[in-house]
Length: 217
Length: 217
DNA sequence: ATTCGATTTAAACGATTGTTTAATACATTT
DNA sequence: AAATGTATTAAACAATCGTTTAAATCGAAT
Image 1 (tube, protein in one colour):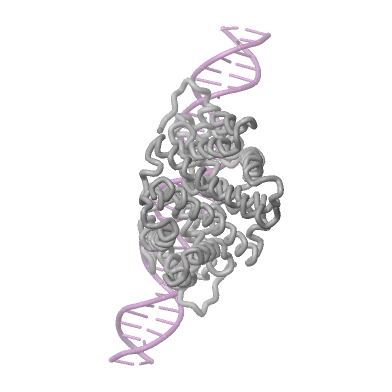
Image 2 (image 1 turned 90 degrees about the horizontal axis):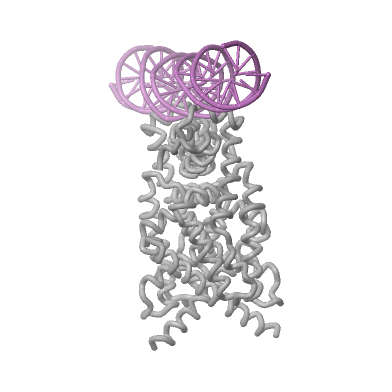
């Protein structure tokens, strides 16, 4: 995954390559020289088009968010006509693919989750543009599954329980790949893993609801 | 959290400070000069006691694992006389505290989870010394809850579902702190969060078992 | 006291970092 | 064809990195 084609303008090659390198190495460890070398561009170009390495990082991060939302829209899970059980499964499947897909989007979500794990000044934009919309959608689905008389903090906790199951495969991917590589080996494996998370969560949520309704009917 | 007392030997001050700085900045971004400055030690000491920055890192990582296991033993959850439901709750509570405790152990588990997220050559030691024992203990508990006639891959998936719910609070702590800070605000909040994860997981596991026994009684 | 090994120190090493410079090449307009 | 503004280049910049050196300092044994 080195050296970009030259048919793309310098400015764009720089941005796309920056997403890759920053995602692989992190802000500090990534070097302007490696980015430029991979992009087949002179070192001075970074400071010509962007003012500094830092500006390049924030622009690359913004582009990564934008492309991630464009390439993996949550369309299916947003359909309010579907039963909430199915919407939950669709959301999880889509989210997990977004996290694990190496071929198209690997670098984008890698850069985003890296920024979350090690926030820079650019974190606020990630939260507003990439996190909150997903939170809101999942919250709507979970609220339907839990019923309307559940207090908000319980909904929030269940949200995080679901998201945590997905995010583990991103943040602890190195562990999963060594101890249970078959869970994310290929497309079908990812689908099966997503299906497990959906059914695991659904079992908990429906029981959660029944337990709550038993205490205050 | 700067400048160490001088009553401790140079060698130890270097190691403990290295855990802090490597945890905060990562291997590449951390500088031996900052480590030495905080430890009140000459720059050359790193190469005198350890041969290089890289060796210092691996030694610091090993010490972090050792101290994490010593300060937060899993003793309670290991008691096989307790009912598995209680052991599960104890395990999760202990694990979550280990991840979120800033006062004593913050740097230790931060360094460990950082190594997982961005593996260096030292990852193998982490897996063998810190991960596998926890996996094995949790697996034993989950297996009891699921019954003996569940296939192994299902057990593994449930393991990861539980661990993922806990690890989210470490890897996406920046998000949780901005969107739902009340969930990890203090000791009691962490206990409540751990209790939620335990009950959420237990609901899923018991239903999981019943569903499996229904299909193959 | 003197010797001797272990420790600490200030200074410098070469390599690499982000950034800047000033000259060159290119494309478009006059 | 000359002029003009943009884009690209090689080279150098100062700062910082990990590491090394060689001298200074310390502590205990002789």
